[in-house]
Image 1: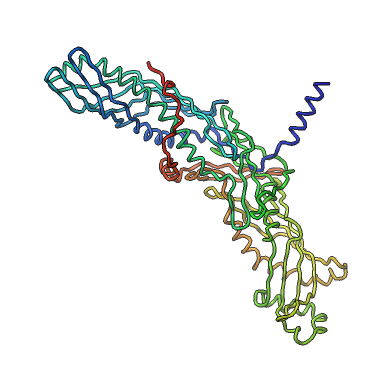
Image 2: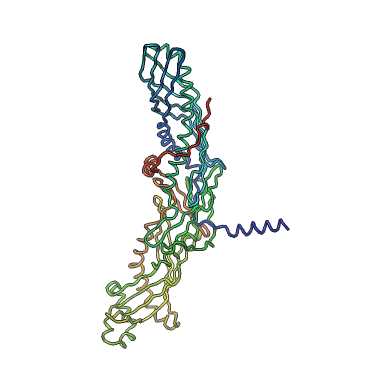
Length: 494
């Protein structure tokens, strides 16, 4: 009985789980590119290491090592890979750091000072970034693990007290190696928890698309990592800005990502596009009114000839009034994605009327229009764009079959009006596109779109249009240093 109860609760929880409208997969193919850009950023961060002054006494010798600065970093061997539960692991081995510091030595009344170049060799760094969703649905670096060690230090002394420095070098190098070990991991922790999170803050979560509609890219759960992929599930739902709390129930097929040949894959379900069209419908955007000179001249003449019998019965003051043609979607359009292509279906009312000045308009006819559009999706930069082509068009009367027959002569000119007058306006809006949830400075290139049953996928490679340093500096938080950095004991002293 308890087993049946547990099974029922599990099924209930599964039924209530929200389906994603958008999925993104980053494959191991992207890691080499990410590593190259990340190492450039890491080199710049490690060069900011500051080491405390090193003071000491051996007998009558007093020494002070100060102004220690990292001058260069050489990374000879590095690897970036996915690791389940640890998310993203970076391993650096046999690296070297170039150092420069000021030396001061006092022996009785004799003093010596100057600058010395040194090197830290056999530097090993093992760090992991754990990724999760925060309370707002944004992906964050939630933890940074780190182990770092410096195998040996090398210094070249010169001057009057060269022999003395060589005698003290064991104490100096051991002390500096210890201090350097203590500084590497705090720098990496700050780079992950503060600087990389400022980069992730540039990913849109809940933002406006235009003046009418917004989009919600909240993560539905923590990212899932395997040995070869990082998978993320987003809500992927549009909403009218005037109704920020409204949401459309997702009953579409869940998109699937199974390929791994490209650097990144993005999948969109029919729900993604349906929520966009429903949002614009609720915002009142799916309507068009043409009055007077806005109605094409040939169509104006044809409509007046078609409804001549009704027009001549009107008063002379109304007969020559401007003509009005109004189209309004009766219900939200719907998207259908099949392996053969993507179509958008819409049913709209078409109203034809005369609009005499300072008088109520006089309706001549009302009809129903069914239209079907082929939709071609493309990805440019990080914007998903759509181009629509009118493929099927039909008008009919909702009053009688006889009236529908009378409307047949209007089919061709009304279709031409849609193709010439309406489609360019629609495509101008859809071609602006909607941003995909990627950080600033990263774009898609060489994309390939594939249609499936109920969803489409886009495979692409990544391109850094801006360097990590440039984007992070632009979005760097005011308090650049994290007050909650972990103790430096995570560094290993070897």
